[in-house]
Each structure stands twice: as C-alpha cells, then as structure tokens.
Amino acid sequence: MPVNSEILQSSYKYKCDFHHNITVIMAMLVSENEKASPVTKAGFFY
Image 1 (spheres, rainbow, N blue to C red):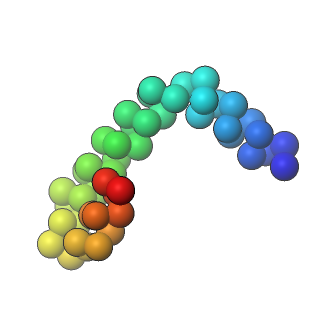
Image 2 (image 1 turned 180 degrees about the vertical axis):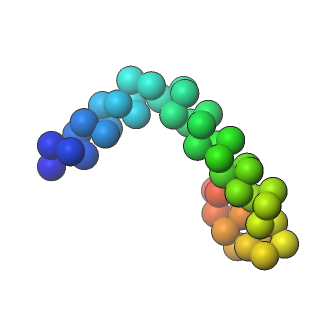
Image 3 (image 1 turned 90 degrees about the horizontal axis):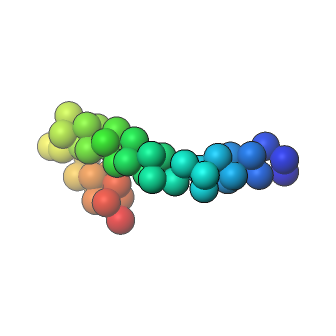
C-alpha cells in the first residue's frame, strides 16, 4: 500500500512533532470529555 508507506515515512521523519501534536490533541479531548469518556481517556494514555 503506497499510501500507507508515505504516511509511515512522514510520521517517522517528523516523529517527534507528530507524537507531540497527537498528545496535545488527545489531552485536549480528554479534558473536555473526562467525565463522559473515562474508558477513552485510559485508551489515550495506553
């Protein structure tokens, strides 16, 4: 799958930025939905 290869290369090349952005987004979602989605919250930080 060429599309997946490109995605993997991009995420590897920019691994730190990618991980940081995802972490920030997940943290924001958790803050807004903490009471409503405890299971999802745990999944974010698995």
